[in-house]
Image 1 (cartoon, rainbow, N blue to C red):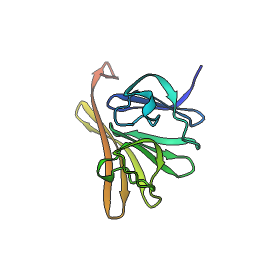
Image 2 (cartoon, rainbow, N blue to C red):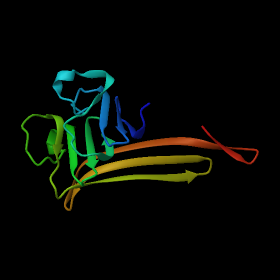
Image 3 (cartoon, rainbow, N blue to C red):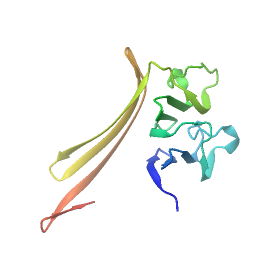
Image 4 (cartoon, one colour):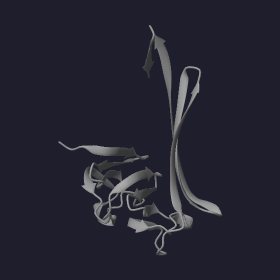
Length: 159
């Protein structure tokens, strides 16, 4: 039986990080967002180990067409669509798609945040990640979900 530290769902892709920090991916690979290379095709139906990552993954964010991983050793890796240089890679790549996890410039960082705001019976939860440097934000991904809370004889039910 497998145990997972986290599950991250993008627009059409899914990632899981197991308890050892290993990353597995499946779903759409149209922009290289799985980090598995072009040989897997544009869609992968079963989880596959993203092997170029040699240190445990601490945090992972899917931006739809790109993915960012923050490793336990502090390194930040990114892969997928890098149009307009959005991935901030150390090694400049001429291809529009970065197919495998690649090191992000060391002076850049990721910031992951989850916040919730309650408005009456509705709660809004948003998560975001940014590749930033002191002068600009180069990539960002935002997700938002809303659910209603109903009072039922003293207990709360989430829908």
